[in-house]
Amino acid sequence: MSTIPVTDRTRVRRLPDRGAYDREVINSILDEGFLCHVGFVAEGAPVVIPTGYGRDGDILYIHGSAASRMLRSLQQGIEMCVTVTLVDGLVLARSAFHHSMNYRSVVAFGRATLVEDPAEKLRALTAISEQIVRGRWEDARKPTAQEMKATTVLALPLSEVSAKIRTGPPKDDEEDYALPIWAGVVPIKLEYKEPVADAKLAGGLAVPAYARRPKG
Amino acid sequence: MSTIPVTDRTRVRRLPDRGAYDREVINSILDEGFLCHVGFVAEGAPVVIPTGYGRDGDILYIHGSAASRMLRSLQQGIEMCVTVTLVDGLVLARSAFHHSMNYRSVVAFGRATLVEDPAEKLRALTAISEQIVRGRWEDARKPTAQEMKATTVLALPLSEVSAKIRTGPPKDDEEDYALPIWAGVVPIKLEYKEPVADAKLAGGLAVPAYARRPKG
Image 1 (cartoon, chains in turn yellow, red):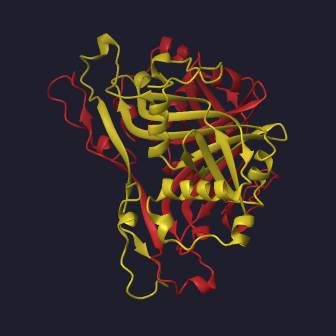
Image 2 (spheres, rainbow over the protein chains, first blue to last red):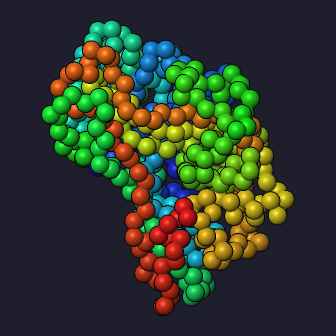
Image 3 (tube, rainbow over the protein chains, first blue to last red):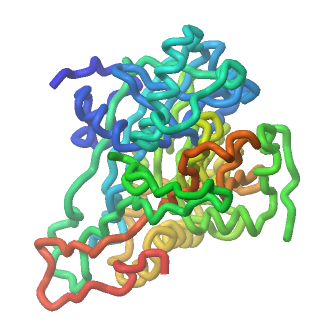
């Protein structure tokens, strides 16, 4: 495992046992997700916006309209925070106090740069698309020069990043275990349902396999 | 419908058709979720942390350990942003450019206050618990005075808040509809799986109904 240097803001202080700083662990969480929450400061106040992302090596890419206020702010290289959260279960302890969730989250800090090199920009857009639906990029009609121009792509180096993980059963106080209260975990899973074809679909097109298994 | 006054930062600028400012719409999104991403500024930089929440009327409550850095910062009344995102589907357009997601998100801005009144604090903890597993609070062993003291609860008034919603099929460019590329929506749903009883469970306790249907 390659361990990422811990900084003051990536160190998991509360419940430090839940902290993880291994690149492989962090990557596995990022690769399972496709939605992140991006935090930035606008006029002195925090803003948190959900968006898709793609990981390519140690870089996290986000994209959007060139007109987006968030992207126009971030491409200035201001501080940002990207958080990816996978919820794995609800943890029902005997005591209300010890209720919890099982989850895996990644928090990355840093400053993004605008991706201007056309080859990297196309690679980044491919990574974002493949992160969400593996296999789709090959089939889709590729971006035109005009569409590329209308799209902003930002790169955040995954250098100041850590994970936080909770797994397993509830942890109750010793004296509570004998209480006649059910305790355990309710597993949670994000599920993909049967694809719904566009009403305007051209004739004779079958649902591609990747639409049933977007994560491959 | 009661419309919430729009401010400069709650106005949905990009794709304004997706903006919603009705209290009922916002509440319905908040009530379907249970996880939010909280943004705040620490030492000049944004931080985004996932946590559970509860809604009670026009107040959103979050809680955590009194030792939590996030809560200790927020209880000072600094600016915060709370975002709740429900992902409903992946939108596969014919063109890579028009790929999208169906989602419902709520973004709330403001300053939290520390909940000190014991009755409100207990009501807030109940709301958070019920938001995650409806029916659990009644069964769980209630907090002791010491546990209440170790728990910080913050209240954020839902006064500066808006929703953003995308639904429906892909929207392609007119000339792309004839392309031999499958297009449609892959629905996504958060599913609760069969509850897993704690290995240390006292004998004779059946899985309660709310563990199978946490949202009621």
